[in-house]
Image (tube, rainbow, N blue to C red):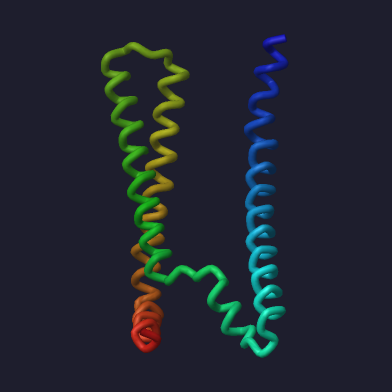
Length: 148
């Protein structure tokens, strides 16, 4: 009985959970689209001479600026890199004390290394993106100042 349960847990985490997460994301987008559509239809019913493009701009979600996207990558990179370093330091400390099974200790080292590498990848992505998109960020900033 326990073998079946322990076999179903990875299947649930690896298959069912991602499918559920994707389904919830699609459902959220559909609900937001339906809500915007209902608002637009109600506004058209009340005022048929309404400028629909302007209304849709006002009720549509705002797109993130390039700078915001880059800062999000910086934040993600910092968090994952620090988590990775924490895992590695914890593994080194436990390895020094000698109080853990070697398989578990290897998994702790592996988790720390993976998190550290992913964090470094996000940080590299941030710095390279910042360098490559400098002109686009300046143009976007100028456009935002013109609109204000």
